[in-house]
Amino acid sequence: MPLDKQAKKEIMKDIIRKLHQGLSVEQAKERFEKEVGTITSTEIADIEQSLINEGLSPEEIKKFCNVHALLFQSALEQSVSAEAFPSHPVYLFRLENREIEKLAGSIKEAVEQRQKYEFPDLKQRLKELLLQLKGVEVHYERKEQLLFPFLEKQGFFGPSKVMWGKDNEVRDLLKKASSDIEAVADRQELETCIRETLNPLIEEVLGMVFKEENILFPTALEKLSATDWVEILWESDEIGYVFIEKPRETEALVKELKTALLEEPVFQDGAVSLPTGRLRLTELMQVLNTLPVDFTFVDAEDTVGYFTDGAARIFHRTRSVIGRKVQNCHPPQSLDVVEKIVASFKEGKRDSFDFWINHRGKFVYIRYFAVRDKEKRYLGALEVTQDVSDIKKLEGEKRLIDERG
Image (cartoon, rainbow, N blue to C red; front, side, top):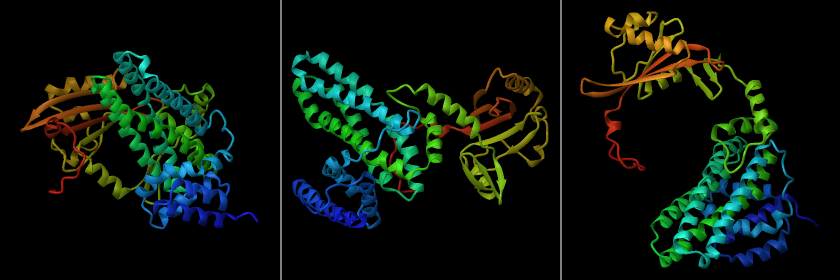
């Protein structure tokens, strides 16, 4: 009698736990084939999510997810869903994966046939291929910033907790491989680089392709609605594609979507709803005042309409300025500059101007931006002022929190 979904799930969870406790892959596969037989990609994803819910750390699942994928490979390959439509985000992800496989294969081939190359030629070939492979980061970012959030809305957090960590491991390996190849001086050093960096990189890159194709994409296709996929397709342009040219029908569809789905801001129930989120009025005011810049908005009739009132303010502003013509807010010596900026914005000749000055011991960066609607109609001008004295001093990187305050 075939196992029901729950029974299969419990057996699989127990196998995974035993793997974490030291069970060999061979023993796990033997038990899997004997007690389970076949399993869908969605069931695998559900199991890992259940383990997270029951307290197994994402780090532990991440550590073993390559083993899990290997364990379930034969069953997964029998249950892969059909190709999606050409304009579907998953179809485009899969097109990119085919190119990722080709690049990984080219690196693998160069490594396997390295004796046929002169050392300088081999080094150059590997450098060029790794530079191309760096494009995989765009593929990962689109997955992380679009697929993961929609899965989380369905209560499914496994991919963002586990797969994102694996993506970062690939990023780190790719960065190290590029650095190591650049530094190698002879074949002996190259052999070390191949063994310690290049081979693990190719293994992880191809492993991620397998996990996406056989676990992530089928699960997402099952759990996400048509509306979700429309929004993912629409927002994919923001991040972009890599290794492929977006199909013409997709380009036309995105243009139609942007026209049909254009959202207008709405005020309702004490909050402002915008295309990118919702803020209560008190939150909106404090968010604007918390920005590390101060800004002033002048409307299309050259009337001062708003300014922030936070700690970052550099030049004095009083509320009496609201409703005043911008031309009257500057001394006569500056009037010509103000007029030129506003006229240039209104005529569509420029979209921004910037200046920097020393003011009372601060190095102040002042920028002016034309504010336009979706049809490029002029709505007004935004003055943004910032003390960049400390920013100018920044060097290197800071990746950790300073516990001293």
